[in-house]
Image 1: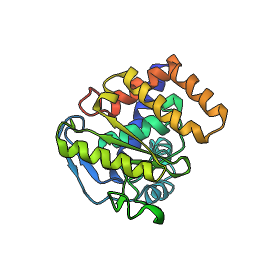
Image 2: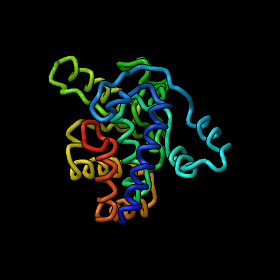
Image 3: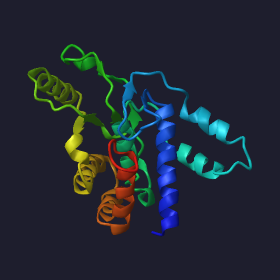
Length: 232
């Protein structure tokens, strides 16, 4: 990749992540977005669709085309910077460091089937990422999970998902510690998604994860979006 394309890719990633922050329920420190304090549980500033509509109006504004493309790649509902990172790693095209998975729903309420409601531990769940058509949920858990209460919660979540024939994959901070860890996690998600996809899906993922060009783009994605990393 040329330096010009790298700069444009970085701008695209940052703009898309900013759109997700505006449409999410968290807010980073504007003065230090990489490692500053993050506020959680906030109301979204707006919806991605509203932002996209507003961006359609200007005609000769510098950078408007990039902003439109970035907004088109964003999604609403993210509750943390790490959810925004993983969404991009899942869904961005390969030239921007992603695997181009089908888009999941973010933090949408999951209602249990009537047949198991008397047996599950939770009335409902809001998985960070949900692919309903693939019966797959994925969550990011940044805690150390050394306490018994955390272990019990994990077991109950897995039990509930098993009762509803829903696969649950939990990602932790270890899954983003380096490029190799990110790729392993992406391969695990792909293996579960691939159960409901045609054979070409698995071949495409293998090509993605073995490509040096995509690795370079994925490193850029990590530099831009992982909290506490230079350039984020």
